[in-house]
Amino acid sequence: MRLFPAVTLACTSFLLFSSVALPKEKDRQWQTGKVLDANRDRTYAGSINSASGSATTTGNTTAGQVSGSTTAVYRVYETYEIEAGDYVYVCQEHIRWKWSKPAMLTVNGPVQFAIEKDRLYIKSEDGSEHETRIIKKILKTQQPAANQPASKSQ
Image (tube, rainbow, N blue to C red; front, side):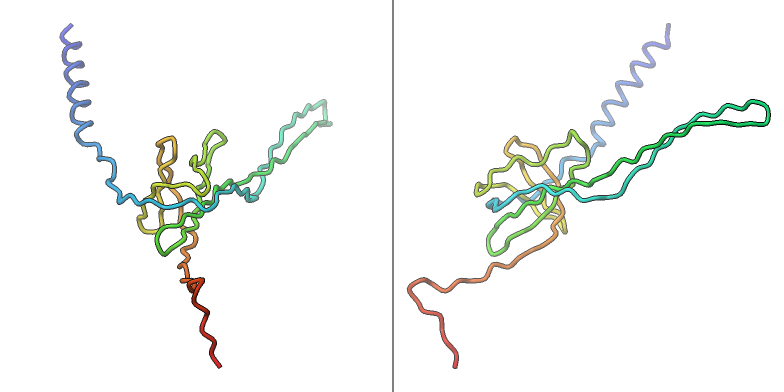
């Protein structure tokens, strides 16, 4: 019965040191922006074929039955347009599983986001964090003021 305390000590030590060795959640530089648009897109990715069959042999004769089916496979993306300062970011979140949900955002509402290289992280309204890939970065152009006419060149 000396084995039980040794196993308990080993498990406790493992849990203690593994929690210390886990990396901390990344500290991101969060910004506030405005959601301009959000929409879902399904892209055809190919198809999966499956077949099944059975065969019976009687003497020199073999008879069989085969059935098969083809299932279409789609990749699902949620595309967001986020305005922040002088830029508009167009980014896509890959919805990998049927049960996965996109970020819950309000169009024309505020959004918390962080940018790291080609990734844009979004904080959803329910508090969850979603990773997206930046597919386009648009520089907003300055519009002339309404009371000043645009200059005409001759």
